[in-house]
Length: 422
Image 1 (cartoon, rainbow, N blue to C red):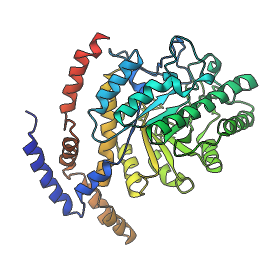
Image 2: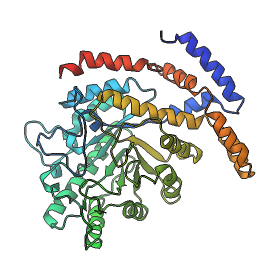
Image 3: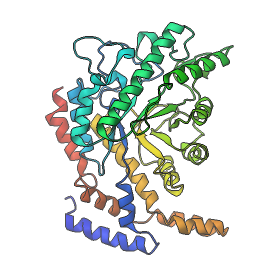
């Protein structure tokens, strides 16, 4: 039997008292958590397919595994699935779109000719739900990206096509931000790179910098659109050299005043994003975070409440970065129910943030400053036994979403009534 509202409330009151003994105000922590808006990624719902109807393989070193039934086949089906996922998350969140999710109608529209009108249905849907949209140019799954190069392509004509695509996408992002009253984060990631070590590493990076400058040349009010750039260590087919590396984009973001996107799966397995946040934010006003879970490589597994996820959340809270870092999700798993994947990953991120918000940070910082590392370690370990789950359940209940495991029954019913008939 699931716990009753009375039981949940009693559990929360006990937890609140226990945390108060540590100097932690659970009500204040929950109020802060409620201000965090995650950006859910649309591509989890349809396996990064989009709606262009080209039949082009994803490419770009991207791969989706699994064939679980219920994949969204149309924009309306995808929006319905996102609605179902959002209804199971406490708080107020956003949706992140790729350009390949345009709805051009019966006539094919090339990516360099996309306009805000091709996303009118998405904008209207978001407005009706009072949520914001984020955006990404799609530099993959296209004949002009088949050789693995786009903005760094040696052919000026191909490079110009992708520059114009980026320009179009910034205008679309600005239109989304203006229509919805919240800035759209438009994030640039490209797959450009090579399987074997190139002789010329300099040339492609010089072309990329020049192309990005052309993409970003048009002034756009940051109240409507903010630009981000995202690096990567390697990809399938670009194991030896990636043009847009972390170092390239870090320098570019600093010199051009752009947001730097840190993707949790885009680094060497021994590197962690949690350690990078305080470093890059010494030099950047804002950053974009793509939360993923790599297993041995950039495999984009569904996010779970792992040590690294907790460490990322701790860094966001301990460094007071929540107002400067935009948190989005980025994974694609077709081996399980896709709506459940959204919910599992999103709730894991929110739980990690709540755990961080429930830390007695001031006390821990004081112990560290005093050199009492014994007490610091001891208290961090004792915190792991605190009744965090009761606080989380209270948060869910006050936001009218299922507490505990109850959300899974709603996903299973949605699968039976909707997804199984696709």
